[in-house]
Image (cartoon, rainbow, N blue to C red; front, side, top):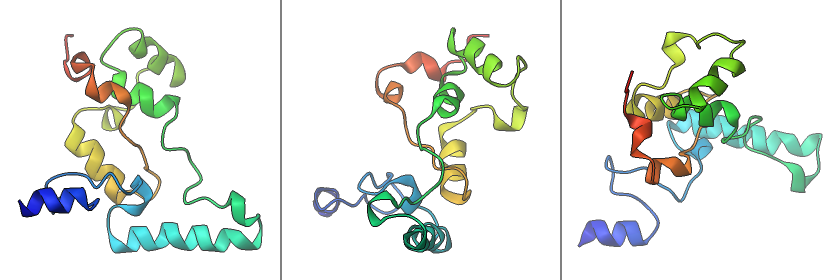
Length: 129
């Protein structure tokens, strides 16, 4: 019952699920979170208050979507096109949800979010080749 109440209040049970009440910039280590907050606050000096942002890249862009869907056609072809008509470097290829999530929690430049296909397209997790 305690876990249900924790989830209902907007937080996930520790170590179990991602806290969906926060965007990826506000997850991860305290140092990482503080850096994104600092950038947000520092932006006030050169842009208007309504235009401030936590990170300079968008959390959902063609590169991230194609990263996740690269096991399926036509997304594989689009991913190859995106990387100069070659396959991307093997270290950056989507291999596991856990690896991608841990990277997004620890890398200051990685703020990728889940894409809707995670919920209805199980083929994206199969390597049929």
